Length: 179
Image (cartoon, rainbow, N blue to C red; front, side, top):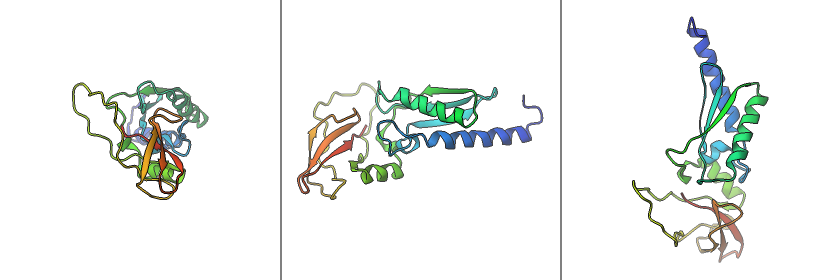
């Protein structure tokens, strides 16, 4: 397929960048104010020698129920943009971490009343210890900015969020957990 190299490489590279820009704009099905790029789950987009666009996605949690919607959303957008052959791969290594949420993504979460996560806990190699009481000591209220908050439920509408309440403004809010 590539004989002279020059023009074809430039075209493929430009098409790969275009495919990436398209995939980056797909909204997350559970946090629609964020794109998959904002959330940090879009791992890469490339075009193979046969012209197949391959996009890699990493779930925020093992068994994330939104993965099927994410895959379908990326594939649909790429096909609508004229890419006929699309493959979506699940990338599990390294596992997703909340540190991959972009600054823009964190800002969008706060603007929508959802507290963005702090720094993810550092992972060690080997077995992960089970911590049943893994809660943050302080989460800043996205509405009033107070740190006087409390967790009311470890789980919210999705497994990646918890429910918190601000003691200052008395408003409930969701919090994206660190992973």
